Length: 399
Image 1 (tube, rainbow, N blue to C red):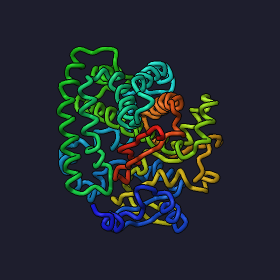
Image 2: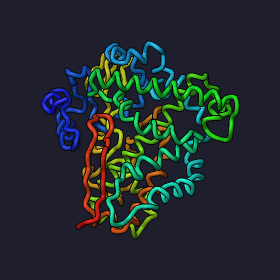
Image 3: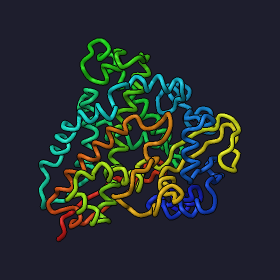
Image 4: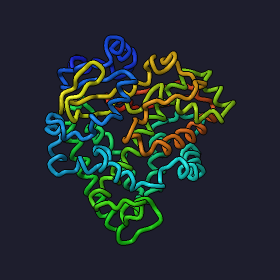
C-alpha cells in the first residue's frame, strides 16, 4: 500500500502516531472513518467504556463487514471459539481454563527461570558487535518461556517466528485482501500442525500447561479439542509477539531518554514501575476492536448495531484527561491504570507474564557494555495500525 493510499484510509502516521492522535482527540473523542466503515475512539474514558461495557462485543462476526473479510475462518466457526473473539459467558469459561497458570503469583514463582533464559540469550553477545534486540532477545525469550510453559517443541518456535507476522494481519484494519488471505492460511496451517500435539498430550499428559488444557485439569473448565487447539495457538502467538514489541518500544524509548536509563541502572528496584510507564508511553498494542451489539451511545455518538469501534489504546494512554503531562516519559509517575493490556473481561490473560519478562530482559540490557545510551540505535517499524511493531532494532557500539 502506497503512502498516499494509506493516508487516505488511516489518519494517523504509523511511525509516530501520537501527535495526530492528540489532534484528533482535541477535535472529538470519536471519529467516523468512512474508508474503513468504523469509528475510532481516542479518549481514555470512552476507550474504557467500549472495552468494558455490555453494549460492545469482541466477536467480529457480529459485523457483516468484518465477517465478509474472514470467510475462511468464520465459515468454520473458528473465530467465536477463540478466547480472543468470544464474549462472556463463553469467554469466561475459556479463560477459566487457564486458572492458576498465568496469575501474578504463579508467574512470580517462575521469575528465576525467566531470568535464566534472558541471561542465556545475551550470554554470547560480543561487546564489540551490534546487538539485534529483536532477533537476539525480544523475540527468543518470550518464545522460549511460552514453549517451556507449554512443553512445546523447539521447532514450533521457529515456525511461530516465521508465521506470526502474517497472522497479525487478521487484526489489522489496514490489511488488504491479499494479506488477510495469507494471514488466514497461516492461521489454519498452524492450527492443523497443532492438532497432533494436542492429541498426544491428551493421551499422555505431563505437568505442563498444554497437558492441563488438553486433559481438562485446569480449574473447573473442560475444553473441547478444537478449543484447546485454538487456545494453544493464541498463547503461542500472542504470548511472544506483544511482549517482543513491548521490549522493542521500551528500548527505543529508553535510548532517547538516557537519564532514565541511568536512574534504572542505579535503582533496579524501580523496574516494575518503569515497565508500567513504558507500557503507557508507547503501548505495544495500539488498537482493540469491538462491535456494537445494538444501537448504543458512545459519548455523543450513536454507534449502530453491527458497526465496528476501533479503540485507540495508545491514544487513551496519552489522554491528558487521564494522565498529567502524558507525552513525557516519567519513570517516577504515580501508579495509574493504563489500558495497554486492555480493560474488562478481555484484560490480557498474559499481562503478569509479559511484565516479568520485560522486567528481566530490561534488567540485563541495562548491564550491557558499552551501555545502551552510548550505543547508536537503528530501527525499522512494521506497517501495522494495530501493533506498535518493531521489525528491526540494533544497538551498535559507537565508532
